[in-house]
Length: 295
Image 1: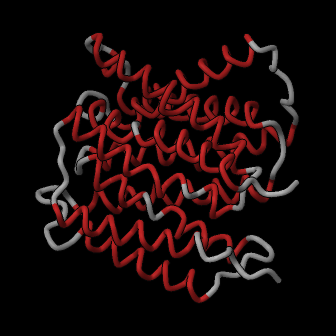
Image 2 (image 1 turned 90 degrees about the vertical axis):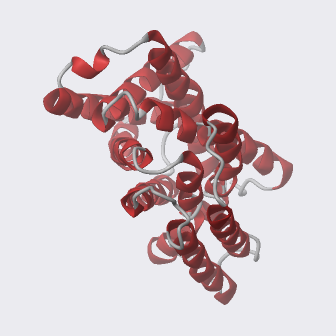
């Protein structure tokens, strides 16, 4: 199958980025009410229910093979339990815009991992220069007062979550098995079960006593900022180059920053914007140079 390119690629990238970008301010809001494990468990469980109902309505509850179950377990950990727990921890310590800008380094990490793990994806000198520039940009976002009073620990947590997401991108690219919808259902089910079990063990049922507006935001996060973009992304990752599919992380900050500013009143400082600009420029260098060397 030929890699997805052109307008079809960009329409998918923009849609996924808008929905996933909204997750940052949504999590930032919910992190003030819910502990990280509880938030991760609710997000995974509600998203799994949403995907299940969607597939049931469309009569597409099929393709649950052994390979799908194995891949779902891996994705449930790498793009579910781990990042869904780390991001609320991070967003208790930093605002949505800088968090999204740090995570925009995803394509840089994917490029490094692809060079190590994917046959024939050797980075060019231009890509290596972009990677170095990107991590300079992250240092500008985190340092030089860029985060204001927020803890730099939050940025490290976002980087850890980004690394986990990058591993999941590489895994999907290597495994490339099973329909996207079935993988999305399995991934969210694994995420919900594991995170929910951890939440009950650590926090009990107390965090479930929340006002109605918290539940409304949680449902929006689970369905429109998790289930829908995840299903779209898994399909994209199996049809596009690893670095191209990871460009979602390059576009997310635009939507995350706009929504956070309009809804939460979080306007990033010029340090954050400058560092973010460097990160995004570095991703452009990595992803626009004709791809990695083959061979």
